[in-house]
Length: 191
Image (tube, rainbow, N blue to C red; front, side, top):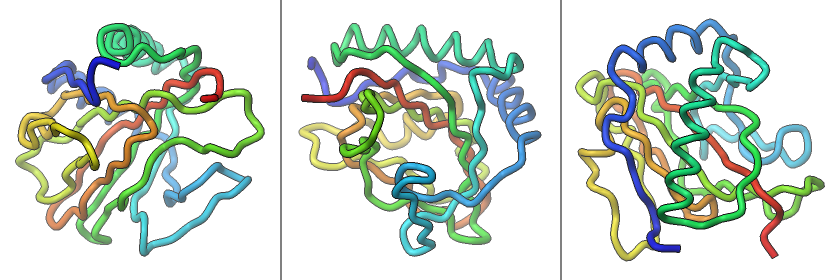
């Protein structure tokens, strides 16, 4: 591993972010939970408050997005992390709104104990909202020697990659709404 994180500043244009949101918001939302859906899933407003939608790889409306993210993930992985990644199943569109103080407290994205042959290896977060339209909602990482520039990763269209085992959070949104995408690149289980 050459680094603890990397990001692509303003990778997606404003127009592309708007297109992704327009398509994604057509999918019915659900309250977010923690854990593996249906197995050890927990709903806790004390820990995570957000609405989510799942963009499935089987939906051809999102082919352009899956292709772009996969290519970017391969590049980030090759240049920084060198993990064994083989799979990208879905993308999660998250909404953090000030009306319910949307947030997701400190967590990591690996389900260490699961019945799958995969673990999440690489986490990707894509900033869809204009940072001038909301307050709070910062993406933060923990226990790293260096941290990314907070203002730069808030820029609309910016994409950040971190190893899935790194703890991170989305701070409470105090004004407006923040939309982001979360993507998990999976690979054979860590040993």
